[in-house]
Image 1: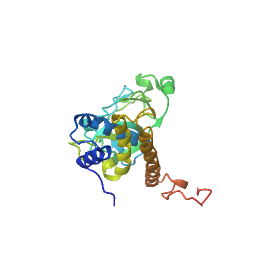
Image 2: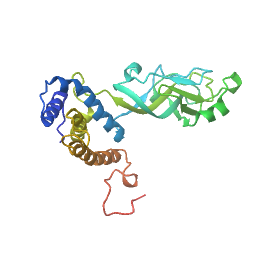
Image 3: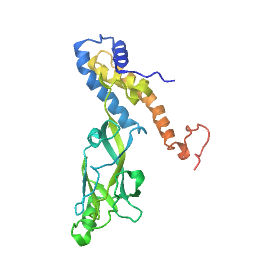
Image 4: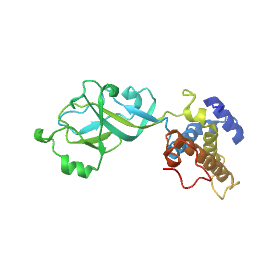
Length: 257
């Protein structure tokens, strides 16, 4: 069983490995940045399954005659059960009743989900760029415009609720958020990523410093641990060899499928 880390245990381990007092003012100052560095690297390197989320509710209802779908990427603002920041949109579902009209509820499980197809803004502008009443209809496509704004087409003719499916960036480990998925289930990778950053604090980030191999050693350890973590996440989602949940076989080639 994995022995996870709470925030206080994490601070103690890093301070011990860095040979610095936990109360050292400079160390305390860089702690938040070190956590951010380590977590961001891991979230970008590993496609975590646990970060998947579904956004829906009163903030996710299209306005007739308006192709815009905008929402706050802060999950707390959307009354989401998770805490963090929405990062990647993977799918937008139009919510209708059995007859194809706008659903009277925002609960996706009580509606008919109709996935919208992702496209380009150029296509949407050329084919569904008009909001005139005669050109409105049931949306079929969507395109991201920026972090908080999406366009749909055709321009909606009804107030359709939608469900936005994607991934989010959880709130960081801190004195008030004392444990995270990463700190509990991937503490080894988390520690190595943190030690790469702490090497800069110890003036050993580059080749011309006191110990040019220090940061590179932590980096190599991080990369070694990262490979197995990526494979494990792929297995969870049946994205492993042959779209199975099995670990890649070293002798079975070619892969199944």
